Length: 582
Ligand code: FDA
Figure 1 (cartoon, helix red, strand yellow):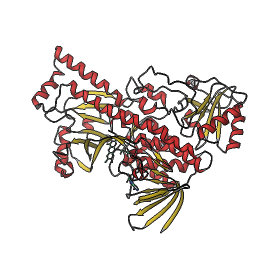
Figure 2: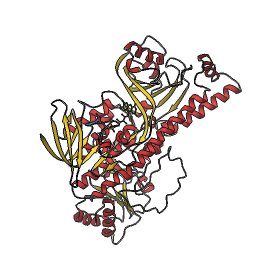
Figure 3: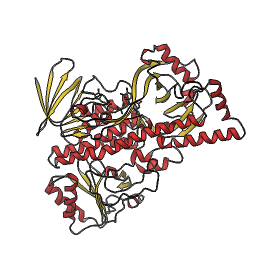
Figure 4: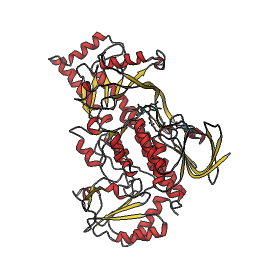
């Protein structure tokens, strides 16, 4: 039997597993990635890539490549509610931070804007980059079991082509093996919540729909066709490649129908019903049934095994969190694994993966579920009820264009219901504003302040430990960077201002003693980094001489309000606390 010794075994080449492997390679850590199928996702699945994920791709050197293959945010703008594409539109909302009201918030918050990129395009980008690093990636290799002991994990992986077993001895195992994965149960972990909330069926197809969409580009068109079926039944149209490649998502009742038995004619009939015209040529590219759940694991890790992505959180696609939370899980864990493997951090640091990421996963699942509920208000505002006749539905729709009090009331109700969906389609706070409250950080605010703003809709930059470092534009010579770019690989960044130069000697002493890299950036120094628009001063919440210690995942680990005479001592204590070093 072939045997492999490697620091980290990663199971699953989805967004979570690929991001973990790429990050570890960037940090100079060897890993083995096994994937039970012969390639990456064969149908589009998740597609909204939010700012945090584009930033993570930026940090992995893939932002430009992603932009080349993805749909840019300006073409993600219009969320449509339709009866058919050919009929007058029912309602419209500017989505994903592209609207007049919100685009400034999104632009100010990050150097990276959102894109739309289905998994069929996203995953190959990551896999190609990973293979270029020389990473050991084994397709058609399935993990079947593992056992942990005090010093490592012994896993059995089957080569699905030859049937031969591979014995892998690793310090750690990452279970990025999705909703049906084995690692979670084998580790004794569980997920809790609601199962089978809805049954969905994706029809992936090619058709030229530019005549219906080019003047109102967007990602999602929600169906509000009148009739006895619950609304949404004609399906939600997702634009994956403007305006030629789409997925139609049908919700169905498994008691009454089985879409997996639909032939091509039936699939095309469903698509034409949404288009509202018969003449369009359609090529079916694929189908996939899936089940909507709302589940989260109370613990993401057990001993030397760490689970992430769909393995630990599964939820409705509302808010587009599936791929994004999976990538962020990976980016949180990878630097911790790297420092522990390199002996630059105590093994307890790894416990902070679950304490930091689990509350974010739970909040994401809860938000997606709430958004799904709020979404029903749009159909309710029209007066739609299950079982209603098509004639009654049409009459209600007609009210929208009827003068008089009844029509005005209906229009007001619809506008209010559409606005409420901002919590799904412009939820900047959920996308970017999360903060870790316990974990690899030293907090300095004794009591949780009560936010005076809607934390789902809005992101407020803060350097409070646990938060993602605020983006601010800084200049170096003729180049413009983001403060987020000041972190290099698995090293920490310490950002200070004029009068804080003393942190340099402190950081050098701490690095020499611990082996942990700390790069000091003095913003405002002649010839050095400049706070081009005063954004860093506005957002840093410390004095010029203070400092912000930024972790490799760009979250704040610790900050000091001012320079301290015993700077090396306070920095040592802070870093030891963050990294769980005795
Ligand atoms: P992901 O499931 O992507 O990857 C896990 C990988 O592990 C897979 O490649 C699998 O083959 C591999 N694997 C499993 N067991 C293994 C083993 N024992 N050994 C080796 N490899 C193993 N979301 C959304 O927002 N909109 C949508 O329309 C959809 N649609 C959709 C359809 C279908 C059919 C599915 C399954 C899922 C969706 N999703 C979705 C969810 C979305 O795809 C999901 O959130 C992300 O893919 C999660 O990424 P992960 O990397 O965590 O798992």
